[in-house]
Image (cartoon, rainbow, N blue to C red; front, side, top):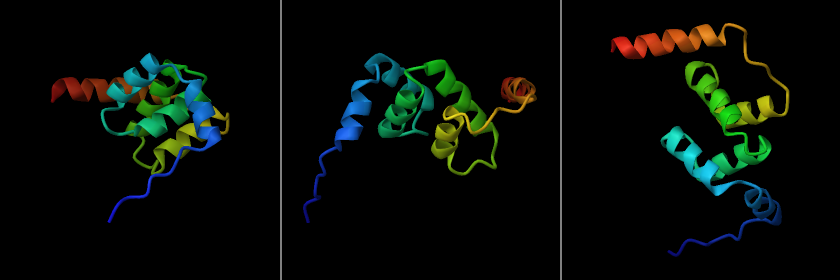
Length: 102
């Protein structure tokens, strides 16, 4: 059975056109399979191509195991509906130290 292809929506095309391809490639490589290309486009469009902001949020979602819907959480955070806890830097440092020990 042939898969039916669906043309991207006008909104999706408009959003994608605002995303820098180099930034998209960089984020996809960084996410290493944890985010789809469509999710990367969505996040970068929402963050106005701010790679560092998306990576910061992505890293937090990878540390906080209670976050189930990582992309939804990141979009909500980009909308200003969530703030990173003050101890996040400490969590990052602890994770980096643990990684070095392993």
